[in-house]
Amino acid sequence: QVQLVESGGGLVQPGGSLRLSCAASGSIFQIYLMGWYRQARGKQRELVATITGDSSTNYADSVKGRFSISRDNAKNTVYLQMNSLKPEDTAVYYCNVVTTRRDLRYTNWGQGTQVTVSS
Image 1 (cartoon, one colour):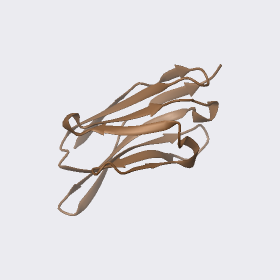
Image 2 (cartoon, rainbow, N blue to C red):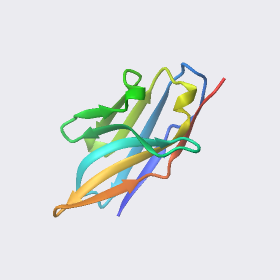
Image 3 (tube, one colour):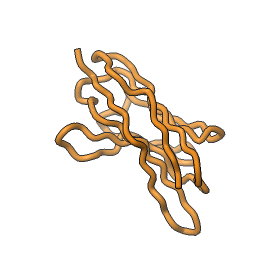
Image 4 (tube, one colour):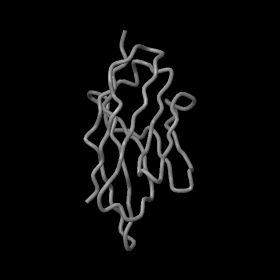
């Protein structure tokens, strides 16, 4: 199994910044993708950003130009730098790590960290 430890959430004013971290450990095998999803109250979970092993990134339209995803392969850690935060960014953010082994895909989720953007 893979364990994911998230950190960096909190309360911030509109226009502020936060940096989320997610460290993976355990039976990692091969990492196919690392990313972040979020779920606001009363809404479905949605993709925020992903990054692959070749450093290819993908962002939700709502965060393009404001958020940046990166990874440290040596530390098995993925980061999400969030700038120019808006109240609409308020949600529980979940780290996601997809691993592969013998053509099988495994999806691992962190416990989630609350991000609240409010005056």
